[in-house]
Image: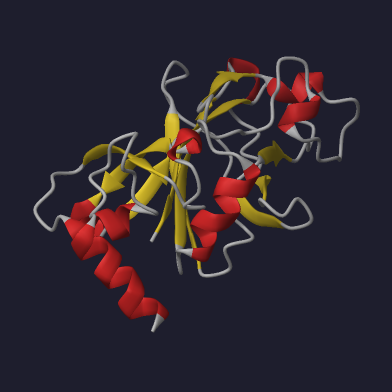
Length: 213
């Protein structure tokens, strides 16, 4: 009955993705308007007043994903390990000078919780970029990396081969693709690289949008 009620509401007064008539999610907007083009639209997951609706990128090509970008998506490439307090440790990027937690554009805690209730899958991509320093090119050390989950009490851990390029001015990129039905894990909130003594290692990250479907 609830499902039929929602369908009737969509037929009688369909959302159009504007500030005044936002959809609960991009998927709902796609159901109301099957021929809309991919782009930015207003959504209001908690379905209260449209005043707290926010803009999301709707990927209708992928079936109606609701994608929200980080407020700051770029961690510049530099020798971040030198800012660590000690070796043989992990230290979250947000605790370093110039570091920050990953926040997402206009997405409140309440709206994020309701967006997850409308979704069954979350995905996100991160590009890890590194550039070897001349004095560290021969170390070829592996790097252990952690990504802090949205729940703050869990993290993804992975190992990356050392950044060893013949051309010291080049940058090597590695793409991490996160996809989960456990919606407590995304979006990502922080990241860290294990300090294994290679202080010359220069790295940075580009954090992509989190997409719910």
